[in-house]
Image 1 (tube, one colour):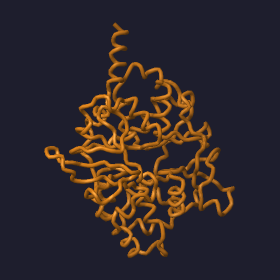
Image 2: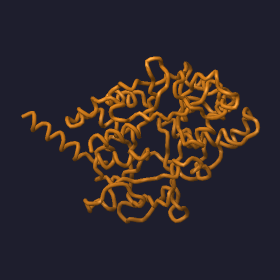
Image 3: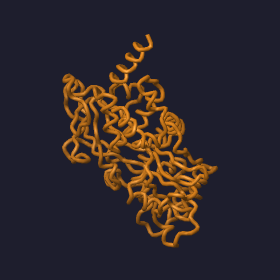
Length: 355
């Protein structure tokens, strides 16, 4: 009997598709290419999301990465809009922090926030990756896509290629009447909420046994300003960095990323921190240190989410899902940083163990 149950659960994991993973997700939240940055930021904050697809009329744009992801009329098939890219919180932060002579000039911030989103897409490389996953794509195939550092993909409710059940996987071309967004976090939330027998042995192993820990970890210091932190993160394609205690580094190291290993972690600076602050405050906070900014933005200092390398994969997933973070800082018994585990690392290592 136990064997039969295990078999059934195993087949259930195999039978899970991208359609199942997005079943509870709301309809796609998007902005038109003419939207201002201010409108886009309000949309991100109101919906508690960190990225938005940008839609434009068909025929005028080349989609991100050469993609042709269209929304078409369900009955006539006529193309209504073309998704041209993704706008992330880091794009907005980088635009606010870049240029501008006086960090506390409010008219400068107003000018920047009235920019059209179409002029901002692609400042950060993530905005140029727009993918779609066929609804029939299996759970394991979804894992393969997300293990390569793709953070999110659009899943059509009814794919124009759905009648052919052999087609699955990631695509750059799609036309459908509506879409939902599938993210790395959705995948891990699904794993946490559904207990598959064949995953138990994998999830009970430690993150170090599963080789999920990335020991290359860049950080900023307690003296790095918000604008320097943002510019460094943009250049290194990082959405978040640990803030470390670094009394011994040279003066110039406070304006760039430093090796965070074996340093005491005292906080996290993330692109999504700006969700917690109003625009008038934002401009005056840019000259502050990132550490001061995180304390002001959260009102109490953002609690750092970390674990040791002995933590099980199940514990790591529980932490990222419950706390809504996209990485865990891995620390030793003294609280010194020894690595990082991102959602990409988690998905990659689980997939490798399953294979």
